[in-house]
Amino acid sequence: MESRWTEVRRTGGRNARPSGRHNFKSGLSLWLILWLVAVKPSGATPCPRLCVCYPTPMTVSCQSQNFTMVPTGVPYDSQRVFLQNNRITELRADSFGFETQVLWLYGNNITWIEAGAFSNLRVLEELDLGDNPSLRLLEGGAFRGLEKLQSLHMHRCKLASLAHDLFLKLYSLQFLYLQENQLHSLQDDLFSDLVNLTHLFLHGNRIRTLSENVFRGLVNLDRLLIHDNRIRQVNRRAFRDLGRLTILYLFNNSLAELPGQAMRDAQGVQFLRLNDNPWSCGCEALSLWEWFRSARISSSDVLCNSPTARRGQDLRFLREMDFALCPVPDPGSMAGSTTTTFSSKTRWWFAKNKPVTSSKAMYQKSAETVKTYPASSGKNQVSTSSISSKYELSDDEVALPKVDQEEYWANYGSEDSDVRCFELECPPGYDGSAFDSASFFHGTRSLAPLLCVSVITLSLHLLFG
Image (cartoon, rainbow, N blue to C red; front, side):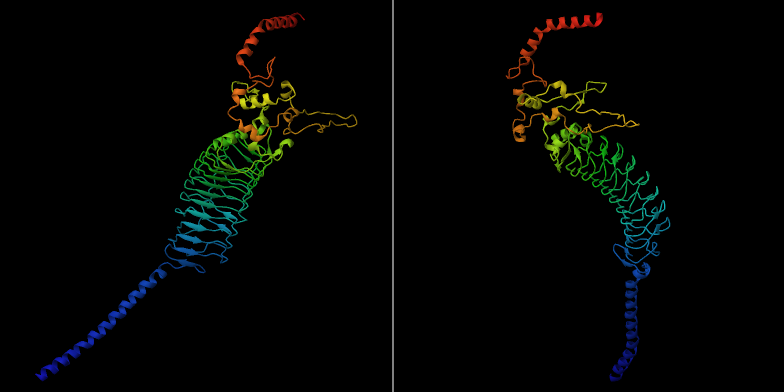
């Protein structure tokens, strides 16, 4: 029995040695496999020299490394590529051999972008080219193929003009940053393909006019910032497609007038800034003033610069009386003649404190250009010493009754019961009592025979001299 036990022990001992070696080899293999799995992503997606890469989402950061061109070796599946603050000068059609969603190129020295340079970036959603002060011109087709682009930054690039087809087929664009460039004008239909644009930043340029079709197609625009320009003229139909606009900044321009029709087209505006413009508050401001009366918006002040008598007043709070003498288009006239219309509120105040001059004088021009030709000069000269500005008030306008604003609006809506006269001049025999239209027309009929005799006499005088 003892010998058998000894034999078993010896046999078992011999069999145990190979099992230990096997276990050691299995553990080593497992460790090697885990190590290979751990280092495999780094080897499969190498990072470009001088760049730092981050997984999930795959990000390649090559910022501030003095690159003069887009580095090679950027992994094709990189979702975000940061190349800002380098010295890149050109972007060519073969510059991007990867597909990314976010590409930052701001703060470089880019001077030229070849047409189709971004055409390989089919899924690009955000492109930042801002702060490239040498990028003064962009070729048409520079953004060709970026049909999924949602945000485009081109601020502070000293752009002087924009090609008419620059934004062609950018149907997905929502944010466009063009502020602080040197744009002097905007071509018609420049933004016509940007049907989903919601934010347009144009402030800090040198734009002078807004034409009828400059914003055509921007049917979903929510914010338009075009302050700090040199705008002098806005076409009455310039905002006709901006029905969904809620924020409009036009402050710090050179606007003296703004058509009320333009603001009526932008019917959704809720926040409006028009301050720091040289507003004229004569008859040319009537349509804008009327729009303010019905608008329910948050607005900055609109301080008058002219005429002198209204300087410093806020256009929004002028009285209807201030525009009582302004001619407006006669809707019943095909020839475009003008007439002067008055609401019952204005007539009520005229009756209370009527100007001293006659109504006929009120329709005359306040000043005429006087040409003088001095005998001592061999050339014709025009003296403008007697020419007053078209924005100055006439004597008749100055003579309009000055009423307290609170008193005026306190009686608003109840004035019809006390209307004195339907014209500037009251009817003959007016005694200050409430105007009775029936008695007036009855009196007019009693004068009919005398009027007929006068007309016949005048006709005979003209026929026979």
